[in-house]
Length: 570
Image (tube, rainbow, N blue to C red; front, side):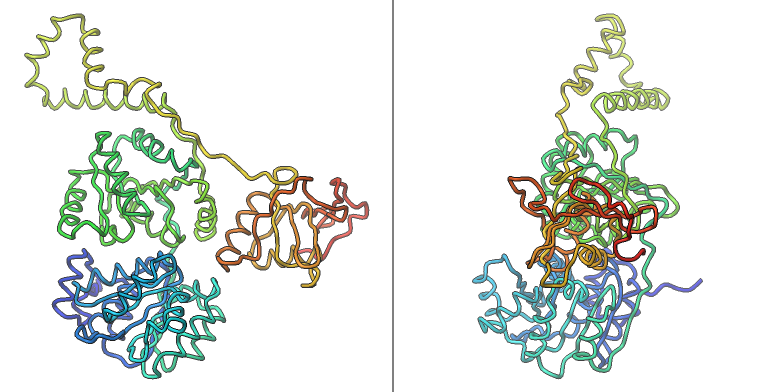
C-alpha cells in the first residue's frame, strides 16, 4: 500500500508544520502536494487546475508565507479573487497559518475606503482583494504600490473573467514588475484563460487535479423551501423526527452561527458553534466534544469547519446555501463516508433559489423538494422516542435508583394520572400541537405572464440582428440549456421581451447575473399596467410540433396552420 504524503514531506518549516497541525490538517490535498514544493523550490510560474474545495488557498498561501520577509514594509504578494466573500475567505485562511507574522490587507467594494487606506499605510506584506477595488487603489487613489511584489496570484480566474474583470486584471498586471512569480488557479481553462496565460505567464509548471465525482450515492439530498424567518422552526422540526441526529449545520455568517447555536441550546439540544472569532483552543475543545459525541450538533461556518474528519455523521444541514455551488458539494461530502448512509438537507428561501439552480446544474440532478413534518408528525415521533428511551432505561436498570420514589408517587393517584402529571411536569406543551409555531413553506412563483410564465427583458434587439428565432438561439447558446416552452416574444430596436417558464427564467437570470453582476443582459421585466405583450406583433414558440421543430403561435395562442419549422431542428 502506497504511503500517503504528509506536510512534513513537502519541506515546510517546523513553525508552519505546527500551525498546520493546529488547524487539524493531517495530509495535504493533491493540489497542495503538487503546488507547495514547486512554489517553495522552483523558479517557474504555476498554473493550477482544480475545483473549489480542494485546498487551493493553502496550496499557495502556505509557501508564500514561508518565503515572505515579515520585516519588510512593502507589498510582496497580491492575490485577486472574483468576489468579496472569496477574498475574505482567502485572507482568513492565510492569516490562520501566519500566527500574525504577516500583515494582510483586504480590499473590496462595500468596505470603508478610509480603513483600507490606513491599512495600506501600515505596510502589509500581502494584499487580498477584488480586481475593481485593487485597481481603484492602484491607479485612481495611488494608495497601493505593486512595484516590488514577488507573487501575483489569480484565484478562481475563470470566475473573474466570467464576471467581466479581464480588463482590470490586465491593467493591474501592467503595474507589476517583470520579475515576479505568477500563480493562476482555475477550475476550467477556457480560451479567455489561455489568452491570459500566453500574454502574461512565462515558463510555467502545471498542476492539474482530476475533477472528483460530484455526487455520492450514499447521500440523500433534499431541500425545504421556507421563508427566511421560518428557517429555525423548520430546522427544529427536521431534527425532531430523527432518532439519532449527529451532524453539522452550516451557516453563512458568524452571527448566524451564534444565533442558531444559542437557540438550539435553549431548546435542550446538545450543541455548540464554531467560527473564526472563537479562539483556536476553544474550537479544538468543541471539536473533541463533537467527535466523542458529548455534543451531537455542530453549528459552523465553512472556514471553521475545515479539517473536521468524522466518518459517521448522519446529517449535513445547509441552514443557508453557500455562495458557490462547489462549496455545497464540499459541505455535503462530510456525510455518507466510509460506506455509511447520510442525508444532506438544505433550507432554500426565495433569495437562495438561483443558487439552487447552479447547484443542480453542477451535480447534474434535481434535488427533491420535501414537505416539512407537520406538528402532529413531530409529536408522534417524540412519543415514539420517549417510549423507546423508557424501554431502554428499564432494560439497562439505570432507573433503579428511583424505584422507591416511584412507589411513593404511584400512591398519589392511578398510574395513568401519575404518568400524565409527570409528562406535563417534564414536557409542558411539547405534545400540544398549538404549541408549535406556523411555518409557511415558500411555494411562491413570479407568475408574470400568461400560464404562469415570467417576462424577461433582454438587452438585445433588431440593431443586434435579433429576430424571435435568433433571440431563442442566442439564449440557448449562452445558457447551454434547451428552452422547451417559450411564450410571447417582442423584438424591438434596442431590446426585446420574452415570456418563459419559471424554471427557464431562473436559469437565464442566474447565468446572466453570474456573467455580469453589475449589468446583466437579461433581467426581470417590469410589469406593465396594460398587460403583457404591449403590441400586436408578439409571437410565442413551442418546441416539438409534429414535424420536429419550433411551432409558432400568434398572440391568441393559435398555431400557424402550415406547421412550418422556425429555424432548424436541434
